[in-house]
Length: 298
Image 1 (cartoon, rainbow, N blue to C red):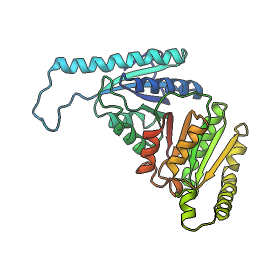
Image 2 (cartoon, rainbow, N blue to C red; image 1 turned 180 degrees about the horizontal axis):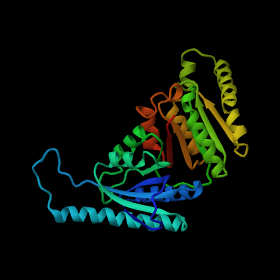
Image 3 (cartoon, one colour; image 1 turned 180 degrees about the vertical axis):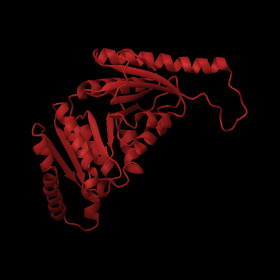
Image 4 (cartoon, helix red, strand yellow; image 1 turned 90 degrees about the vertical axis):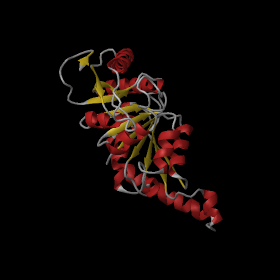
């Protein structure tokens, strides 16, 4: 391991997977700003895999090829450190390169850290590191916060949180309030009380007035749900978006409507966010978002 500032082992840091791609650079920028904002150190990790393919188990990779792959990873991490220092000059940065499976390495190294941050759709020097499967695997299996940076964002832009009707999303709600407070911005709370949109409900014979009444009941229930957090974070202005809609679409639409800088979702949720990290909703948010998405475990 090498460090650009400070040689002591950091107790709690934001860890970033680095591969030298543009997506990786966006992740490093976001993580550096977040580490500065939250008072954490930053860990940059370049993961490279020099193992042979399962289809050619007897193949011996020449040492000069392995050395070149390792050098690519080293160069990517050094470049990432320069990017991070430009964002937060006083930030303590630790950097390392590791040989192994990207998802497994990041999950192991990040298990006791404040958060794991990843880019997506990159094709940098460590090909395939951020093609989606690694980001999705880490987000689904990490025991802590995971941020998938799907594009650049404005730090002071609103925070959007997806809320279901069970206590499972409480961790995401609290983290969303905390993020909004840290960033001195408003919080957009999105709740979908049915996965069907208004037109579909009308098609099933439900009167528009009844749809409106159920939406208002959901608004009241959501307000009660958020009341305790509003007391804890009185500086955060909350805007409630309650509507009948497919949950992934509702969250993404709110993020676009309010020009959000961060989306926060919980994992293993039910109700409007059933199977969030296991099925179509998570895929939709993580793959279609154009801003950072934070996944918070309960």
